[in-house]
Image (tube, rainbow over all chains, first blue to last red; front, side, top):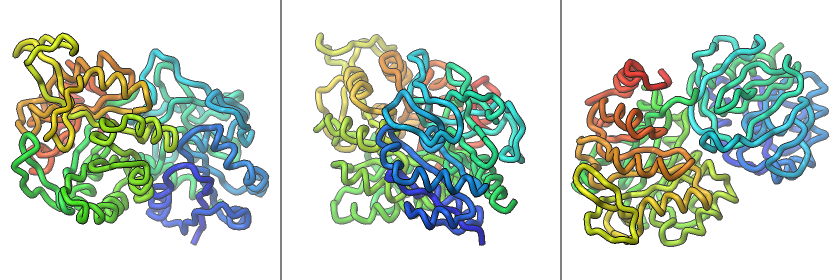
Length: 201
Length: 266
């Protein structure tokens, strides 16, 4: 049985992520132990909350995560977890993991903040993470800040809320989604299944 | 584009789903775990669970029920009712909820809104406003011209039992400034009546805040949902009995809305 580790760094609710990963047949551990992270077939960086404190909480695990990624196993950051894959954020001080070149900005006052609810995607670059999904697939978003990605080839899909922003990103074995796949019904479970398949490759 | 949301609500008393009219005359409507699962499968965009258990003794069992419902869901889950402090919020989130809804506790101590939003994020702070029309004119209130005459909207607490003298529109503005991530606005006048949402109340709220607003109270048929979205431009519409007794399954309502030009997730 493939093992997935949800990184526990004290940001929000990991219950639903664990529940969803179990549903798709993974053995799930919630852990902040470097050894457990390194030995997992797939790693999820979840996250709800504020970039600054989260970056701080994650600091002691940064080297482990970067090392894990070097071993060519899949990492998925979701919501704040995706934002932490980038360099920096307007939301707070602290550094991201810099696994994907980019930064995080706040939505303008022309739209409701937070961007909360179900929204669809516009596909920019085809990727295996999108298997079985299309532009009519809907995902659940809750966020006030959005990612800006430097290299457009790393943008898998975008979503519109006042502006068009990257909602799925990928650089080799590193994936990020701004929405919550574990809260996005069947379409969300497909993202997690596709991600879990990367662990087998 | 962001879709409008359809949200079934489970009012739970002593572990069972109940539904009343204008907050009284409760009758049994089923098991919360079964109903939650069914709604999630039928295409609900979110689920709200309000604990209306009266006694503290029985309230302790609620965390277990929340956990059992959460296990069946792969959509967002809001839990409210009887939350008195940040410790209750923490427990509810740990048992699988994504958001908590507060009414009485927020009115009694507005600072709790800021406290929770700082600790867990604004996205998990839903402020529930139970409002009732008051036709006794008072120049200190925001008076709204309605079809039934000039009135203001008064905030009620303790499950719709206790009037507070607080202006619901001013209260909405205030909470959205101090950390609320979303408003759940229930019209006490319309609750359980199946006469449709109080569109004038919803419009007045929407005009004053820049956070998502969920309309509640009065949905009885598909056109009521359409009115809430098309006329008041609310972000989500919540209903209970219309779904519980299978008058209109969620899919039927969603298809009706889509055919009428509302952006909806099918």
